[in-house]
Image (cartoon, rainbow over all chains, first blue to last red; front, side):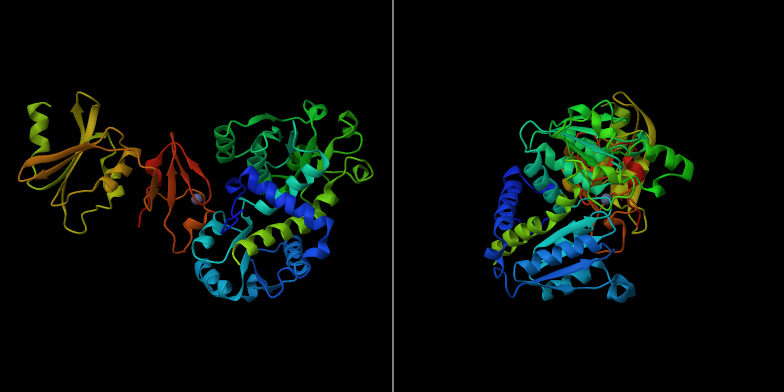
Length: 304
Length: 154
Ligand SMILES: [Zn+2]
């Protein structure tokens, strides 16, 4: 794999994805083998909005490869606060690091930033846009639990604004998965994502209720429906309540159903699901480190 | 071409005549071309002129300026039937149609207010042209209808 920048899941071919996942599996099996692999290398962390978890996961990954991080710190203490453009910020910071990881509240920010730097830049989330490393760890989890053969995936919740959903849906098309999208009408997939899925000839259907598809699923990927998407509290409670699952809901599912969630969850997956064999979301979160190690390793190696 | 039309098209000495513009789009054509008269260009506009082919059409004539193919292709988004006549010495020396470009840079403004191209960054808007509509290369927002409403105004 040779990519300068990792901006969107769309840019990754099936072979690219598999090379990252294969490497992740190797690393997970023997982490000590790579413990000094990138000693002396620095990863620049540019988090323009807080995301403690993603940031910790990248830091852990870089340090477990023997490298270290340099962190811009919170935006309110940086030059950004003084009105510096993103283009300027990344051009300065690229001089400090061998690769950059960026999270930013605006869509297209990662693509734009990558136009201005020579070191590889990894998009760790751009507004409601893309989040390709989340997708890679999601795919890793799917491969380890359900496998990619003849795969049927249900993706439920906020499909309109959920960037993890957009990235995952793109990537699943390269594995010929059948996809079911389950959401309230007001939170269906945006036009641009639907357009891409149709372009690739993806097998997809949209639903407003989980019941009608649950028994056919190998994987159920749940995302949070946020309060701020609704004009009033009552409407939110009523609608969001229809997309919450508990152990009882899952009695209608296949025994092998894998339940995933990008976390943090609030009440969309009840705690009683944790005790069932369906719960894979904590393993999913743990997979973030080996997958990001694999990606960093491939990127730093390619640009050595 | 009728005599009447011939007359309208060839009335400039040197420059470009854009003919067969979709009726009512002439001012948008000028906006896309960045022509607002402030640089002293001699511009004449005919709107809703009867046309055999289009029913009603607009015509724009720009004296003293020969527009390049790249400049005019973007017009295909709002005036797909437009024809371009390059005039020298009262003669039409070149005549061609607009072709759909693959991308449009710096002409349209992304309607997504959360798109990086709408902020004060050193980046031009950039749209890929689809079979129907255009799509922001940065945030992926698709514009299908009313493309003229998204012409960038400086
Ligand atoms: Zn945009």
